[in-house]
Length: 298
Image 1 (tube, helix red, strand yellow):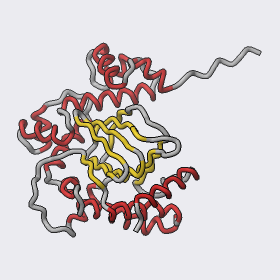
Image 2 (image 1 turned 60 degrees about the vertical axis):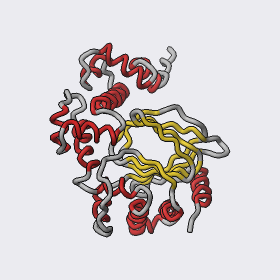
Image 3 (image 1 turned 180 degrees about the vertical axis):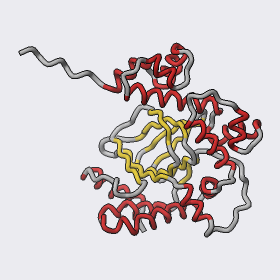
Image 4 (image 1 turned 180 degrees about the horizontal axis):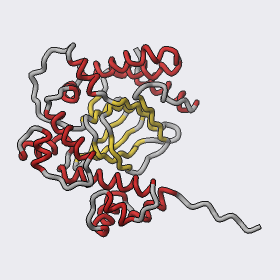
């Protein structure tokens, strides 16, 4: 059985070799040789295991600090800010993340007895990773040494990782991801609508209807999952989409603001600066880096 130390040593070897993990379906490896600034983004449903170092994730008004031997589960698309807090060149931050498939989890639920536990919605969860889960993750990672086995053994090991999660401390959250009628899945339907219509005006009643709940119940359950209100969630999505738009187009700030649903460019600028630390135009300059110098006259 692989231990956390053995997995760490293997990841250090792969990092030194510059070995990619792209051939492993749904798997991502992160290596950081120093602490990083807080980076906002939208995290898709994910399981992550920290192998070395430490990280902090902010979601709404909640802060999650976790380190080596701990795992994080994000059950729905979530605006978060992630920051590596423990890393150095000698002892880099090492983490393995796996995308969570609700359909795969749903199929596996057929192999488990019904759970009579609380159906209340819940959001990001952090727990210690049991030895069997670490071993399954390690055996998935070391398939990089046998690329010819990935097509057959990869899906089997991915299912084993999910199975270990379904049998561990986070079993209730994993079940909720796979159950179409769970409170989490109901909130997830409203989240999907907001992601697709982030520039539109939100109607709490319409969102509650999409989720199949009463308005007050929906608001309470949405906050339990995301640690923010639907309006706060929409605002973070708008600002993240605006940042992507500023990077990928030559539109001016006002045009991008209107495109993502802001009626006031000044309000957009204030909220953008509050979230990203710089005004939109300045942030775009920093992200794009210095322009190439003009060629000298001959």
